[in-house]
Image (cartoon, rainbow over all chains, first blue to last red; front, top):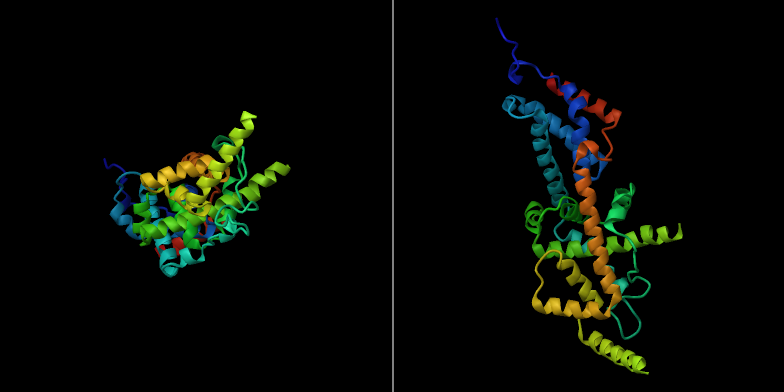
Length: 204
Length: 106
């Protein structure tokens, strides 16, 4: 009596079944972190290729999905590193709009809010906003004019909830640099959301 | 009469303070950094005084918090990937991957 061999090494895994079984999950994971369809697709593809190469090392420890997600996490980190390497040092800081015009005034109160750009009241709660299905679209549209690295820094900090230290290490930037980038990203985003979302809402 | 006098005094204090406190431009930077680091006691006092007299900066602070809270809540909702509203892999991408995988396998 011989038991059917179940160890992965002895059985040639059906790689196209991997794509059917785990493709959507991995893609959603990558989309969640990268918010960019083609970058997410690349990361998933690279994950499957790396898995194909390393399959012998897997030896069926734990679930296949957990193993694949582990590989994907590295691919996502690589993607962020690549963006930073491609951008010269200081680029994000220099090219992110500083929106000085928000604080330009002709009277004696210069460097205080210019009334045309000053915040207005939003009358919204997180609970209401979370229900909006277009939330990520509006946020992405507002992030897209920013340099890629600035958008990545903001996403890593706010969506992934990484700490300042983790981001600085991952992207090899100084903590002061990080604060300036985040500050400018927030200044830009708040204004963009107000124009494209809150004032539009008011006219509904 | 007393109300008018009170308003006048308040206005004078406000004007006097605004002249001495960090500007709105400096304050919004501190507001953002207060989300990243422990701000100093001096920064904290200046911030509180500035917020006491400047409604625009109060709203700015509220908006940054609202943005952060909403993004966190939305991210938590979506970290359950099976139930999330994120798009699945397109049929074309799925096919491309299968092809690449079968080519590499040979």
